[in-house]
Image (cartoon, rainbow, N blue to C red):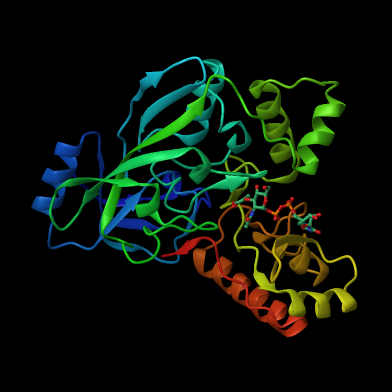
Length: 335
Ligand code: EPU
């Protein structure tokens, strides 16, 4: 059923109060098809968990919330398990479902806000793992034809917080399900410093997937604001990749600049460090600002507008460009 003038506050993790001209959920592909056929004249915005977008004004046209649910084990043996999950499931609930059943591979991606359908869109990643590492295929509804198509890993063209769905196919498909190759015999990734330190604090020497998930949850809870309490969208900017020469010149000026090597010619720089070192961390402008523990996260303390936060992001972009000669890119979708 289509509703009019719906407040989107509960549907975006920034907690921004904007209105959708028309709004509906869909719980099956048939329902989605019917809604799109009957409203083909309207502009369309599809929401997953609303955890990676900044709504800067009321939304004209039709806003659809993906409520496709269900988890299915497709194949399982003593080493691997293939699981198909519907796009409207909450990502973290799905991770917990897997941990409870001993399915490994996504424990490092615990507590990432958002929906399953949105996860491949930006190739979610944390603590040394990205969804592409366990990805088998996804199904997506093509808006123009009304057909559901299958995309394998190559067709998704995954990159750092990137996929074909953010680039050439932007706005053309709605991800309806995702199939992942998980493990029943696990290969843990505890290489990320904060995970190994937390595991030793926990007194764990031979970690299980549950231990790794607990460590990740602990790290995220101490560093990142909980969107249920303080509106935010996780990392607002991407970590920039620069040439090694550019990096070395910056390092000569800023010896403790946080970085991750990419390859011989490129270095990824921690945008959080750049923004922090430029003095933005914890900066509060009335009811919004830069988070006090992670400068990459912009926050809405309640009642801020998307325009306020957008302007703050513009000011940060300008300051980073002036200070380091680097143009940061936003990770969130500005709508
Ligand atoms: N740092 C600072 N000051 C800050 C924030 C970070 O100096 O205010 C330094 C840290 O000390 C560290 C480095 O920057 O040396 C990196 O920080 P962190 O480990 O927090 O990771 P990040 O690069 O800032 C990325 C992802 C996160 C992901 C973490 C862990 C991006 C844009 N962000 O953050 O993803 O959880 O690594 O893997 O790649 C997200 O995408 O929404 C997200 C939260």
